[in-house]
Length: 355
Figure (cartoon, rainbow, N blue to C red):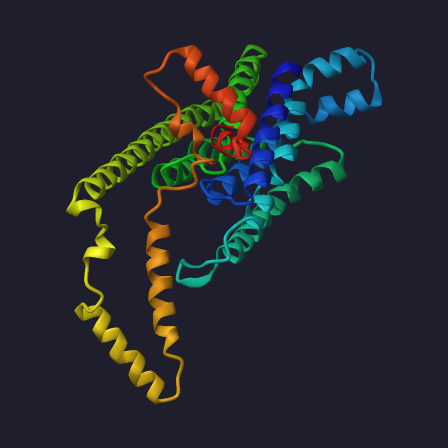
C-alpha cells in the first residue's frame, strides 16, 4: 500500500511542475478538477465514518489495538486522505494560470480567471456542507446513526468517480492535445490507483470504497489515449507543413534562378502599378492636409510583416521533435536527439508536452 501511496505522490510532482513551467492551464478541465475535489472529500469522509470506532481505539491504545495492527488496517484511510490533500491545491493553481481573455459562461461574460475563482467557491461550499455532519459526529464521540450517511457519501462518490473525468475527456478531445495536462501524472495515477483499488478489494473493504476509483482510473486511460493521439497526429501535420514550406521555397529559388536572365520579380515588376499609384495619391493628399503620409507606408509594411509572421509554422527550436527523422535508424535518431540536447536552448520546452 505504501508503494501505491508513493505512486500517487510522485504522480502529483510532474503535474504541478508542468503547470508551473508552462504558466497556463490550457488542456486542463477545471470542471473535472472541481468534481475530483468533491469526490475525494466524499471518499475520505466515507472511510473516516466507517473506521471511526477503530480510529478511536487506536488513539486510546486499547487492548488488542497495537500500533502495527492499527497502521495495517488504516492504510486505506491514509491513502485516501493523502490523495485528497495532495490534489486539492491543483484547482487554485490552475485557476491562477487561466487566461485573462473575456469568455461567456452560463450567460456571464468575464475573464477565464474570474470564472475559475467562482468555480473554486462553488465546489468548496459543498465540501464544507458535507463535512459538517462528520464534525458533529467527532464532537459527539460516536458514529452511531451515521452509517446511513456514510453509505450516502459512498453513493455520491460512486457517481462523481464515474463522471468526474468526463469533462476532461471532452476538453482533451476539443483542445486537440495534452496542453498542461501531464502524461506522467495520469500514468502514475493509473498504476498507483489501480493497485490501491485491488488492495482495497482484497482487504474486503466495502464495495462503495474500491469500485468508484476503478471507474475513474478507467476514464484516465481514455484521456491518455485521446491526448496521445492528438499530440502524435499534430506533430505529423506540423512536420508535413514544415517539409512543404521548405520544398516550396526551394522551388521558388529555382524559378528565380532560371527565369528572365537572372532578374528578380521585384526588378521585373514596374514601380508604377495601380496599387503603388493609389498609395502615392493618398500620401500626397495626406501631406496636403499636414498629416504624416509616411504612416500609410508604415501601416502597409506592418500589415505585410504580420502576415508573413503568421504564415510561419512555429518556432523550430521549440518544435525540434517534429523534425525527428522517422525513417532514419535508431543510431541516427539518437545522434539527432543528442545534438539537440547540446545545441538547442529550448530543448526542454518540447519535452514538456510529453511530460
